[in-house]
Length: 90
Image: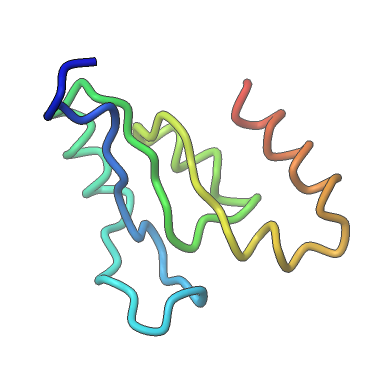
């Protein structure tokens, strides 16, 4: 890595999120697609992503997702994480 060069882009929030007191404005999937078309760096999407939406976020161009609420509020954290890893690996 060269000093001063980013390794990846954090992008979001994709959807409304409850984990921040004052979240940034929602960016949505269309904005994610536009960014993906313009940059070669990996994009890590964050914000309001759930088990039911992670597939569409990845399909819109995210290289990976960062999730808080879906995991920390899950009744079975291990099962949820294993399921999410399976989706992301597909």
